[in-house]
Image (cartoon, rainbow, N blue to C red; front, side):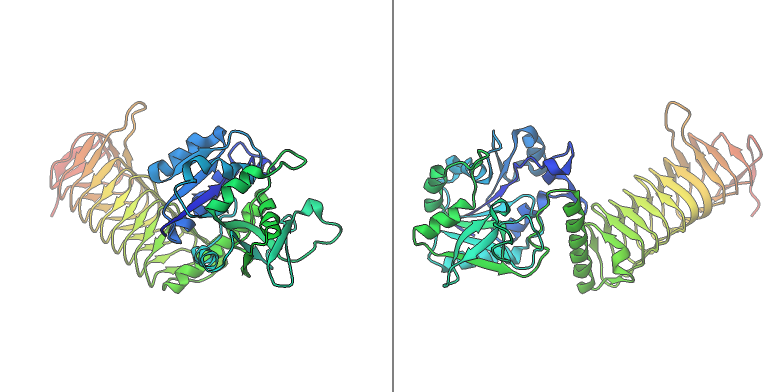
Length: 448
């Protein structure tokens, strides 16, 4: 939106998290908490976003966002109003209106920001704020209204005289008319603890006979502010439910939604069925018509259409179409399974490419290997890829047959159409269409 700038205030100390990690860098559904309000502002149409951070972790914030936004440092922790004032040198002549959100309120949705900015544009007032009547958070300030429905002040919990003065909580999300905001920020007086409170601007605007308009959200998850790990867990639960519902609306079947865990960065194709106790995390992409779980853990992997993964772990791997994995197998970083590959139980694969139609029915380890199309990998196969100092590669040709309990001592190559006998220890290359038998293996002609 033209003439709008978004500001995310994220310089708070977060001491109640009891963590060496800055509060807003703790993860929610696989992503740092701070990325959510930034992405929400952009999804609401506000492309120009500033981030106010503490100097102690400003480098981490810049690394997280790169050149996509500008970071402003609050040298001293003197409250939200002081943090916002740090943006004045950059914005006093650059924007007519501002949206201010808190970095620890990550579940606000783009539609709510759009509604808030639209209300601000309609009303003739310098301040518009978001409130909630369903937050359930006792530590939030309460909005007071006059007979005309205008907000007159925000009363903080420390100033309650007994019961809260209202059930309408302040979400800490505001729109400001920039020309009114900056001089009033500079005129604020510090509170008893030396901090400058942004909520003071509400009563100031009211006392100047300006209209202060509230937008009320009845979604209690939107205004959850994260101050400790209990709130972090509540926000995680709410966001995961939101993600699950979103995918079900897109045509994904979740057999038992509460036991299905899907990170924010995951994508899933239609008509995929996900069984209980399945975790999809990181930047995982799942195609359509897949069956995942029960008990599948898939992280930062690409899973093609019509794949099945049962009770197995897949990490940083690629499954092309019509692949079957499991139960109880482990695909580690760099595993790439071509079309129609079958991997059964208790198999481990890492840094290896299995071409189309390869079968590895049960038991075994394949590491640093290239396996040709339609090869059969017998039970108990081990590619002996590590000599104690370096990793070495194994190559298995197409249509090869690797007998049970074969040890392939890398570097070694088994040629096209070649075979190994049960229990063979292969230390030398096996030519195409030949047979390796024994320990160490001897090369013989392969029977048709």
